[in-house]
Image (cartoon, rainbow, N blue to C red; front, side, top):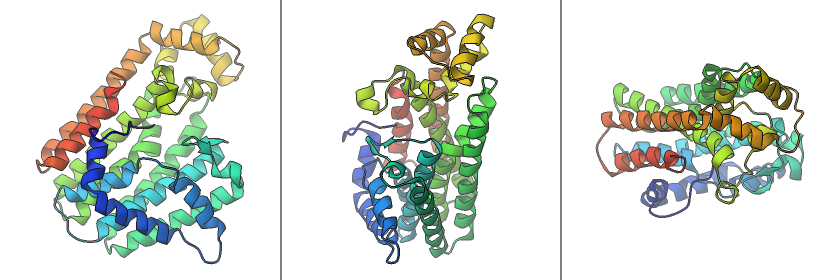
Length: 333
């Protein structure tokens, strides 16, 4: 999901404040993605790393450390670690989803091949663990290793739940907490750990990242239904066409009568879609209040993220992190 790029947005203000640290992160990423024996590794990695992107996850790590005025070098290592893990998962996801575009550009698996994408993703995971170890913190290693496992678990759960109209909101939330929120919460939590924040403060950072990640994904689901393709970079209805059980769909299916269930089983389970099906699906979401209910869920998760920040130092970074949680849902409220 793209966030509007403007200096009056919370993430842009964070990027300005943390510009020198982000430069150091980008330099470290460029250095560590190099390989003197396999030139395809930096080629594939650079294609994705240099494609733009908001660098939101490493920015969250830097911001969490800045919250406590951390002065050491390892927040840069951890921010690069988080970005490597994220990039590795994107490479693997594009293979699993058979995607052809990422951030408006051809995917690595399309330009090279699936084998290259998978293996380069594996390389980046390995690099991320090398960076973790260099911090000398077993707690950091534990948090990020757990997050990596949770991400993979969430992806597998999503695979098994795909195109299954009996998928519940609880399963959806488990998937989202795995594939999206796990890295958000790890990114914020390790920033506190490296800054010697208290256990309670580190938990608050975890809670903030977890809730922000869930809100972020729910908004992404909503924008697929109500968004503007020019601003989101996605065509409206891509999730429906790919038969993904997103939250608005799950809510509409849960409220469906027998006749509507026949439609959902044809379009989602069987994949038999014809012209007009997307419009009908959106009509059903509106009919059952699924879009409004999903919007309310996103707002509630963003508020949960803001509430977590009340336990943390009250400074400009805190205000911007709170503003970020609010901004994530502003375009769908």
